[in-house]
Structures are given as structure tokens and as C-alpha cells.
Image (tube, rainbow over all chains, first blue to last red; front, side, top):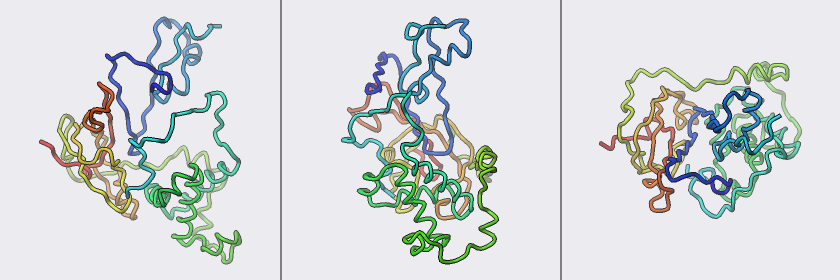
Length: 67
Length: 223
């Protein structure tokens, strides 16, 4: 995760899911603070490929300019 | 088999260097797209299942497996399956020219372009009925059996011999080790949690765990 630039606090437990069977997992990125009332489209703009593979957190509102 | 496909825990492969999200193509060359399509379409001829096809790809010299790219390995597996099942002869593969005709039953199964999306959307379920009661319950301590079969297996090397805790029960799924040999057998499947320190010792990241899906045959009670 560090190679993806992700540093997490020591209080966060990292759980690795090794998909050895045909059971598939869908990563639901944690909703960033300060996004109350955002539309689906606006929230989607915060989600990256790496967030969807669980290697980084979603962008925070300050990373993007809301339109 | 203990092949080069099971890379988990291996060092020396260099840093993870993903392509930038906006510039990552689905395929890196036209032939990759063709191999992908060929392999999917050939699978619908019904001569092999997912586990047998995985095993065909994995059964390679480790040096070849690691030197080749992902879709090159797909192609190697496909060629092996085509010859093994008699769909194509070794000579036809070498010359690229058909020497015989295809039987009517096989022709009937050819996947037509207009059916691809429907067939893919339908999927191929792996859940099965089982007439036995699951041996383990969430919370049970289990050891992943230290076994190194020459045939296909989905029990990764890095968990073998280690103790974990049943996290969840997934129901009965087709057992890959037997399915690869052509025998369809439903077996209880569990998500097992291993503490990272149990697997990686002092090199483990603190406060992390690995969840692995393991079939009942891979597990024994650890009391």
C-alpha cells in the first residue's frame, strides 16, 4: 500500500482478501468527510481505480474542484 | 502443483508500478484481445471447465511462466487444452491449417458473436448442493493442511500448515482439485482469517490479517 502512496494510521487494521474461490468481493470506498449532500455523480468523481482495488482511500473534497 | 503462478510472498519482483489510471488500456496489443476472445469462446465448446483450464495454464516450467506475459500464458494454456481434447492436432497447431473436419456436435456449440453478451451475463455458477453438514463454524480454529498435490489446487502455499479462524461460511462450491480432473463435487467453502504475524512472522505488518477462501478438504481442526 505504501507503494501506492497510502499510509494508514496504526489504529487501522489492514485486511487482505485473497480471492482463491469464485466468490468475488466489491470494494466500497469509505465516504470521505465533508461530502454530506453530494450527488451520486459528485461522489463518483472521488473514486479512483486504486480505491476500487482497496489500495488507496477515495479522494477527499479538497483534492477536486466541485462543479 | 507448486507452480510459478502462486507468487504470494515472493520477493524480488520489483516495485508495483501501475500505469496511470487514465492511460491504462484494457489490452496492450490487438493479439491479446484475440487470445482473450479465443479462450472464452473455446471454453463454451464445453470440453473443459474453469479449473482444468487454470491447471493447463499453471502447468508450465516456472521460467516460461514468469518470462511470458499474462496473455501469452493464456495462449499456452489454450493450445494445450485444444490438443489434449482433440479439438486441434499438434500438426494443425504448428501449421495453422485444419487437416480434418469438425464434428457436428462441436459445430452446434460454437459461440456466435450475437450470443456472447447473453452467455457471459448468465455466468457459470459454481455453487452446488452438498448432503453433508459443514464441519466447521465461524469462530472455529482450523489449520490449513500442509499438502503439496501434483494436480490442481487453490490452497495457496503461504497458508499451508498455519492456523486461522473460520470467518464465514460461503456454502458448498465445486471443489477445484477434483473439478480440474473432470469430477464435479460440491464441498463446503469457508473464509478463513489468518493473523499476518502467523503467516509472515516478524516481517508482518502490525495489526493486519489475511482472509483466504478455503474448501473443507484443505482444513483440519486446530482445537
